[in-house]
Image (cartoon, rainbow, N blue to C red; front, side, top):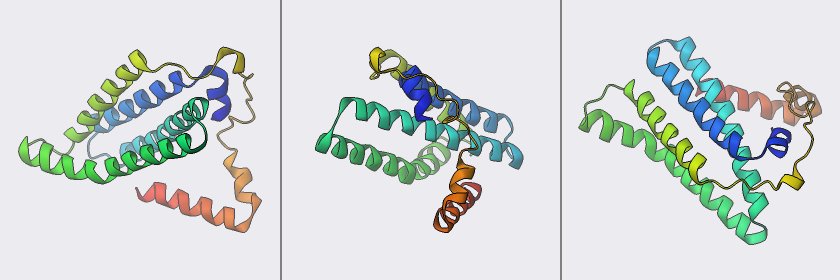
Length: 171
């Protein structure tokens, strides 16, 4: 992923990841109750999250260093963690109980939030990759099956990858 971000810049991947997640949520809304669609939606969102946070970390590294980078990364992680914890409470208390929306409408709320955020990013985010620092595309590094190498690296890496895969499936 980093190879693509270093070739094409951070902005298109940040916006693209948000739009891909929005599309996945839209798919889930249109097919509410279909477990197979929920699995596809989750896979797309997890991949999009990876792309998004890779772009964010890379953009931060372009612009910050030392303690400033560390503090900013901690702040972002804190806000992301709070969002994960508070999001379900807000959706239950505000949207479902107060506005009487059906649970499937939370997918639409997410489409709206992600779409609006992508629009703000498109309008305000300044590309952090200087044109002279762009690298040629390394297609080997972008191979989505590169994780198989990690499975063979060591027993502990194998167990870590299996655990991570089970967590994604359980979600």
